[in-house]
Amino acid sequence: MNAAEYNTCVEKYLKMVYRILFHYFGNREDAEDVSQDVFIKLYSSKISTKNDEEIKAWLIRVTTNTCHSYFRNPFRRKRIDIDENEIADIVDTGSSEQDIVNRKVVMDAVMSLPEHYRIIVYLFYYEEYSIGQISNILRIKETTIQTRLSRAREKLRNVLADCFAEERSSL
Image 1 (cartoon, rainbow, N blue to C red):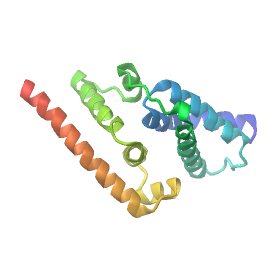
Image 2 (image 1 turned 180 degrees about the vertical axis):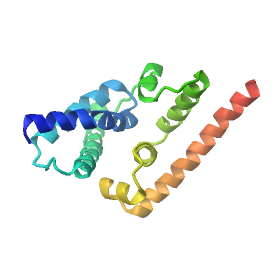
Image 3 (image 1 turned 120 degrees about the horizontal axis):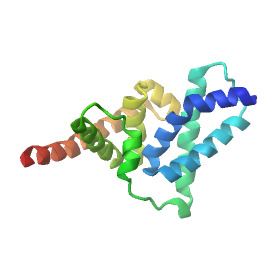
């Protein structure tokens, strides 16, 4: 991969890789550090830059594998609580203040999920991958993806029902 191809890939996929990492770590610093590692691996890889879907899938797989390696290191297992400003950077701003608040509530709920649910929710809803595609990318059985997605939805349903019930009662 030459420098021009590499720069094009970085520009095209940096935000996606960062969002995946942010969903794993919940903080900006770790997401930035690991995204550098991922793109160093991309530069030294022998992947062809002709197929965008192949590059995207490769980057997602390498990103998730790098996260798993990162968490295996005992020094890195400590997590920092998510900052409101970081959520604002990740969540697209809407036209109304209530819309922004609702998106932050949903992002908080997603971030409260266990790691193995968060990445599947992210890939399914934000990156719009099918269950089969997620299965191929993460190299996990489709039935496992379906089960995890179902369980994540149920957890989100419970958390969000509680959050919005409190909001309605305060009105």
